[in-house]
Structures are given as structure tokens and as C-alpha cells.
Image 1 (tube, rainbow, N blue to C red):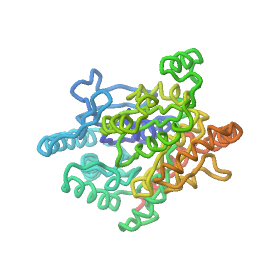
Image 2: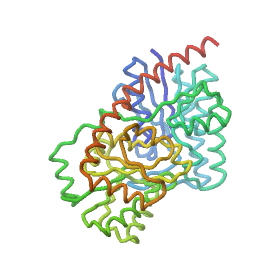
Image 3: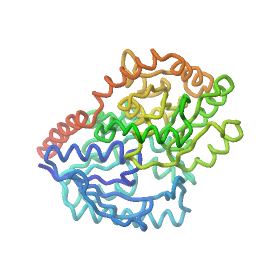
Image 4: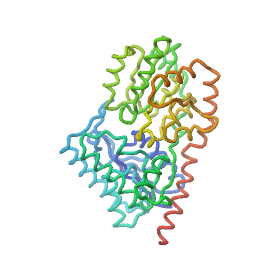
Amino acid sequence: MAKIVFLLTQSLDSPSGLGRYFPLAKQLVKFDHDVTIYALHPSYDELAQKSLQVDGVYINYVSAMHVKKSADLKSYYSGPKLIQITMRSTWELTKSAIKHNADIIIIGKPHPMNSVAGLIARIIHGSDLFLDCDDYEAGSGRFNSRWQKSIISSFEKWMPKRVNSVLTNTFFMREKLISWGVNPDKIIYLSNGVDSSRFRAPDRRELISLRQELGLEGKKVIGYIGSLSLPSHPVNLLLEAIQQMHEHDADIRLLLVGGGEDLPTLKKLAHQSGISNITLFSGRVPPEKIPLYYSLLDVSVDPVYDDEAAKGRSPLKLFESWVCRVPFITSDVGDRRTLLGQPEAGVLVPPGDPNSLAKGIRSIIMNPDLANELRMRGEERVKSYTWDRLSMNVNREFQIRTAQSRNE
């Protein structure tokens, strides 16, 4: 049994926290490891409970995040306040990591706060460091100034060369890491996946009630479930596609589930496009309600440009759509074609093109046989991407690589 610590600069209800780090932590507990998460929270001062245990994982929120979240919106601190919060959070993560004296430290994303904490803890205790790079941070983040982006970019390139091993969930990021001078033998590919225990079939009565409440009875529902942050998630493409489709099909509805800093912008765009009456913004919903909202959808969409932000991202909504038996549509960018398999468990359209996106969506909602085939393919495909299966590989890698480092 190993003592494993996660150092996270986000909360466990964030996309990576909920969809990657916490499910991996839960599975590591099942391998008899002692697992603790030290994390930051966007509403730290208002948290009623800062320490808890869930499914055998010890969770401790130790300080504030570098962003604020209020209701459905996300906002950013000014420069001086950001520096103050960053220093405080770095100190709290460092104290926690030193006190814990873990055998393995997993740094979730190469951010300055958790990276510094992990490095100092290794100097003191000799812990094995694993760094997880699940995004291209410099290419997908929103930065208020050039110096902020420069710091993040520097850590993203510098930190992977100073840990025992690097985890990444895309082949694009693997190639990036190699180009930055990381030894390929240090890189572990760990795909995103799905925590199937979260995605039980919703209660039928609750589903009928929500459908009625949202006015979706008898409608064809196209949905996006995720962050409303345009630099990494160009939901504007989906709004343009729906505008075109609405001209020919009055029964379609667009359901956007999630929050983010661009929620007001997207609401304004929906109004300007003349589709505000058929576009529903649910805002953030509790994690346990996400399967309920997927069950409302006829099509789930991952709109992308052919850019580095999309190439560096492995969309969680792909795996969630599969496990919820919802036909999925995206573009041939990054690992998406590989993930869809053969025959493809989803529809691929040219990236950045609302016209093609509209045609792709229409091909699914107008063809029940295709929709059913995509559901069956996704249901079969997702079996290879559940966290109980993915965790077996990473646990094996932990054992091999920690043994190697102790023999060196």
C-alpha cells in the first residue's frame, strides 16, 4: 500500500476534478492505497465543510482558487489580488504536502502553486512525483495579461522535465512534451474516461417532470454539457448551426448545461441570432443531475476549431454521452477520430464550420436508424474507457516506475 497525495488547483466539482482526478483517486483506494486530495476551491471562504471523506478518499480544501465562481459565472482576480491568492495557496498546498509525507504525489496540471508544493515535498521526503497534463494550458486558458500566460507557459514546459513521470490524455500533448525535451520513456498515456457509477439511468418520473418543466415535450433536443468558456469551447459554432437549422425545423431546441465566464456573451449571441426563444440555458447543475440532463438529449455536441486548444483536450462529454446512450457529434481534431474507433461511435464534421455542424446534427435527428446505431456503438465503445479499467494500467505504471526510481 502506498500513501498517495493529489495536489489540485481546482475543486472536485470542476470538469477535471469531477471527471478525471476524483474517479482515479477512488479507484486507487480500491487497490488498497491511502489516498488524500489537497485542493483549492473558488468559494473557499464560504465553504461550510473543508475536510471530508468520500468513497475512501480524504478530501481537504486548503485555500482559494485563482478564479472566482458565483452561481453560473466565473470571473478573474486583478493582478495584485491574484498574486496574493497565488502566494497564499502555494503556501497552504506546500504545508499540506510536507505534513503528509506521501510516497507518491500526483500534481494535477502543471500550475505554479501545486508544482512548487510538489517539488518542495519531494526535496524533503523523496516522494515520487507524477505530473498530469490533461490540457494544453497556454493554448486553452484565458489570461488577463501577457505575464500570466508567460508564467503558465514556462511552468508547463519546465515542470515535466523535473518529475519522475508525466501523465497525459492526448497524443497531441505527448508530442508537445517530447518537443519540450521530455524523455518519451517518462510519458504515460492515460485517456480520459467515465465514472460509470455516476451515470445511472435517471428516474423516469423525474425525467418526464424535467422535460415538461423545460418545455421539451415532442421537441428534438440538441445539447452541449460543459464549460461555457469560448477560448477552449467555441459554443458559438453550435449557436450558428442551430440558427440555420431553425429556419427549416421549428421543433428543435438547444439546451446548454453549464456555467462560465462567457455565459452572458452566449445569451447575447442567442438573442442577436434570433434563437433565444428556442435556446435554454440551465446554468450549472449538481453533478448527480448530469445524467438526467443527458437523458433529455437527442444529440450531444462537442463544437471545436482546428486549434491547439482542441487538440490538447480529450472531451469528457464524449465518454459521458456514450455511457448515457446519446448520439455524439464532433470534429476530426486531435484524438477524436481515434477515440471514436471503427466503425465510428459518433459523427465527425469539418471543424469550425457551422454549416457542416448543422448538416451533421440533422443527419442524426432525421435518421432514427443511424441514431440507434450510434447509441449501440457508443455503449460498446465506452466499456474500454471506464475508470475501473483505466486505473488498472495507471496503478501498474505507479508500481513499475516507483520501483525503478528507488533502485536508481
